[in-house]
Length: 79
Image 1: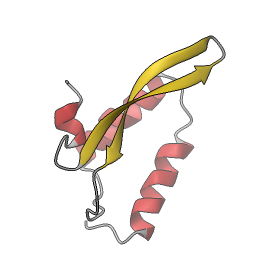
Image 2: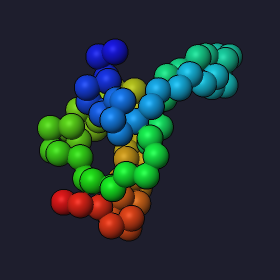
Image 3: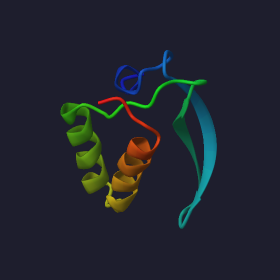
């Protein structure tokens, strides 16, 4: 519920539970999926910093974050 306000739930995204296989077995995760046909927008800097810190905290490769920003630009994102 805490992430809902950051993720634009339920206006921009819907929540769904999925099972993810990890090296330690299957875990259940909550994911946010785009809700319908909406215009792409770049995240504001505050949100981007929060996401970036989350990548660092969980040792995720920021390449995925950068790829998502490039994809957003390619989709004609509103600045």
